[in-house]
Image 1: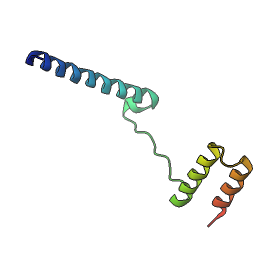
Image 2 (image 1 turned 90 degrees about the vertical axis):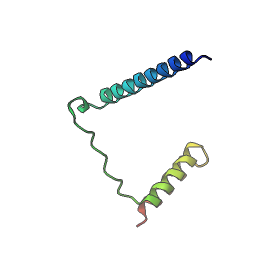
Image 3 (image 1 turned 180 degrees about the vertical axis):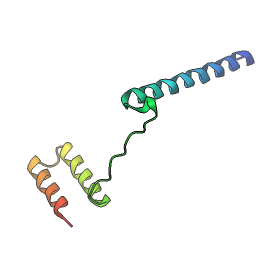
Image 4 (image 1 turned 120 degrees about the vertical axis):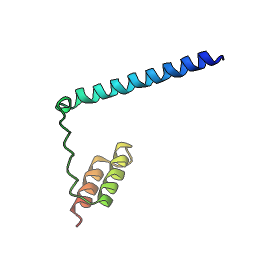
Length: 85
């Protein structure tokens, strides 16, 4: 491939990348009202449960979604996890 073609290809790739970044920024602004006037989204507060409980609940949910446990088992085990100190 001649040097001119390589250079042209690199320039085109840079242009495409810049357009993709601009499109992503526009989509983000469209999805979050207020960003166009400089407002930042509010972060959600942390969950009132420990990280280990969150991990155990996530694992339990995966078992439930994979049909490895019944809905009754899921809800009773979930309640037990949340009831722990």
